[in-house]
Length: 195
Image (cartoon, rainbow, N blue to C red; front, side, top):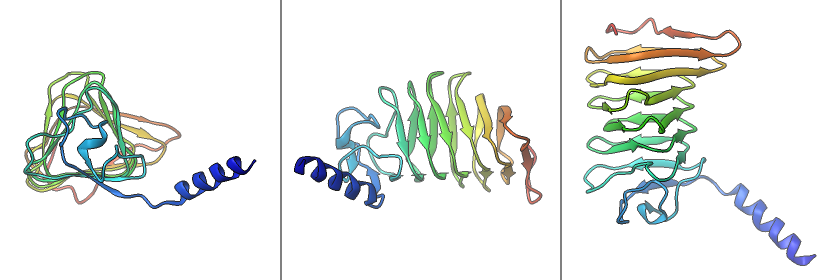
């Protein structure tokens, strides 16, 4: 019985621990999101961990062999994330100042918070079925360079989504809206560039 209460106490303590920020190091041989040694502090990010992908590294994360999950995701300028073979789920917001690659029909990116394409960001979509699922808003900031010649930008969920575009370079292949319960997609009134 004492062991049972000890286990309950440990689980309660673990549940109350704050989320931590995980930074990609790429220290393992494989540049796989799901390997503990590729992160600092060591350990694969959980759904409540914020993730930073810094610039200046020799290799960057991919979801080729295992799915990825995090709370907020920041891809710094000069860095990249490749969604390939498995899904990447961002439970919070995603800010991309680097490159997002999508190379497989099996890998989807789902962002529950706002997806921001910052100045200098790019998208390299090389599969016609690649899908970015947005449950909130999408912002294409000034001087972002997002050209989605393939793939889908899919707005889902049960609340309104707003699309804001301030970059003349933005090109979207296919935009779909699969909202439930009445909400839809709207363009923000402060949008300064057409799509």
